[in-house]
Structures are given as structure tokens and as C-alpha cells.
Image (cartoon, rainbow, N blue to C red; front, side, top):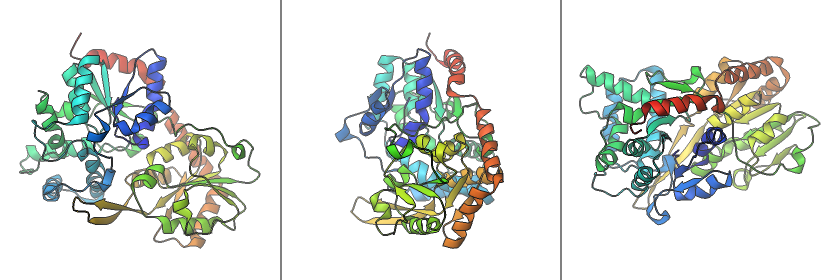
Length: 444
């Protein structure tokens, strides 16, 4: 397995790795050296790629846009003929997904240019001879390593399939002649690596021989890719259970989290933290807020709020009557698995980009998962939105009180839990992955 170096990319694969290992398979997780310790801390085998000194630092959307790329992406957007809601997945892809891909697939790279982590992955795959490579869509060159080693390969999605949606729409535009001068950003990123290792670039290389899709069906973007649905079994880290969590709450408990990955890679939203804290102050509830010192430094923390830097959601949420969060897929899945009604924050995060000359630029965007997760939660009656721009403190209080008091929200939470449980688990998938691997690998 390969992952982009972040816990939000590691945690979704842990249950599948565990299922494969329990069935007797050997599994390694390849990624940046910076996450090797995190991988091993959850009991899995890490394959650090490249030397730490020669590898880029993961910056996610804070990665600068390469020179000339904005103009090229404008041509792609024109070819896609975006309309209405189509602008949202394209905007998320452009703002969040592509920059993560550029970090390890530099724009403008040539096939003659050494690519430390990727070359290491290809070399290891040729020696170790895996039967299957499951790759993170933000690390697409893993497909090159799979093909170079004769292995089957598949993507494991941690969000909507932006890559498949855009690649297929561009192919259709190219077929009718409306995509002149617009190259697939994914093909552009992978081509130098593929040429360097003697691998042909085609749709199968770009999108996998099949796709393991953890998204509920209503949240998926329309594509023709071969899907193997898999239930998102939440894994949110491992830690000792704290003493205060060993007793049943004496009044309703509410969890509040704005996401570890948001805290790590982005800025902004802090002013809304103050409004959220103020909104719960007069309610007869206990709030557990996973906020660090920097996020609460400027605000009064009410007596009924306990702040902790981190506690696994899988430990916290079973005792909670509601969950306030930023709309990230991991948080949504943890709430769904525990039948917890959700209040999703509709707000902006601040992206600060540091350029080579030392200057910085910043912009604000909605979290890329917020729209699909909130739309699904609202469609099933499992929660409400908390709008950062529109809702006063009083309205925030009313919305939380509604979710706590009205039985319909608990019924909605049970509804999306039942839909999740109807999807095959990672354990259920193992025999299918074995069959698909045997069929698609190109060596005996």
C-alpha cells in the first residue's frame, strides 16, 4: 500500500491492512520517511521511501502553484464545460488534491530527472514482487511501480473520485474536439515517472484496474470506473483511555473537533471556535473539545467544556449525544459508525502558501469534504449545518439543542449507520481482492 504522508491518509487503510494480515497476507505501507514512525506505532510495517533529506516536506494545499500551471488549469476547466454544482469538485481538485500530488510529482519534471521516493518504490516493488499494490490517489505513481513489477493495482479512495470524474470528462471532451490544448493534470503528473521506468500511460494506469470506494453511494461522483465498495471502518488512532472517559456521562455529552489535519496543514476558523464555545456555555451538557492551546488561546472556555489536544473519536463518540465537526470524511465516518447525530460547520479554512522567494499569499476555501458529507447527513435527517457566516451564537445554541432534543435526528443517525453497515467490510473484501489480484497481475 502507498499513502500520501498524513494521518488522514493512513487511518482509512488501517482496517483493510488488518483484514489482509489476518487472512495471512504480507502487507507493507510505503510513504514518506516522516510518517514511518506513525505507521509502525499502529502495529504496521512501514517502507520509508527515499532519504529524509532528499524528500519534500508535505505541505498539502500550501504547496505553491508551479509557474504557468494556473493558465494550463484554466484551459482544463474550459474543456470540462463546468456548470452549476460541477464547479465544486473541480475547485476542490484544483485547490487541495493537485497540490498534494505535485509534491512528489513535480510539474515540469522530465523522465531523466531522479525522483527519490518514486524511484525507491519502483525498485522495491521489482525486488519484493507484490501481488497487489493498493495506492493512494494522491500518490498515483504507485501504479507505475505495480506495472513495473507485474502486480495488480487498485486505488483506495478517501474522498469523492475527483480523478476519475475529471479524467473521463476530459476524455469525452477530447473525443468531440472541445479539449484542444487541455491535458489531463493526472496524466501530466504521472507521465515523466512512467517514461522513466518504461511504462505506458493509459487510463488503467491513471485510474487503477479497479477502485476500492469507501464513499456512500449518494456521495460518489459519476464515473465508469470498476468499483469495489468497502465500508469505511473508522480508525482514529490509538491511545490509553483517559480516566474521565471511563465513567458514563451524568448529562448529555457533546464532542467538538475541527480536525487534526486542518490543525496541521491549514489556518483560520479560530474566530468561529469562540462562537461555538460561547454557544454551549448555558446548555446543561458536557462538551469535550479536541482543541489545542493555540486554538483556544484567545477565548474563554466555559466551565462545562473540557479541552484535550487529542482523544481518538472511536473512544469518545460512543458516549456522545451529538458531534460538532468540520465535515472531514474521517469525522463523518466515526460519527456514522457510532450512530451519533452531527452538526457540521460550514466555514472557511485559510490556506497560507510560502513561495520560494520567502513571500506568502493566502486564500480561504471550504474544507473539501464538507459539501458531500453535509449534503448526505442533511438528506438523511441525521444532523444540521452550523453556518460560520450566517448563524449567530443564539442560533448555534438553538441548533445544537434541537439535535439533542428532537428524536428525528437520532433516527437519522441510525439510518445512515444502517446504510453504512450494508456495505461490505474490509474483512468481507479479502476474498474478492485475492481473486482480482490473481486475474489482473501480469506475472505467474
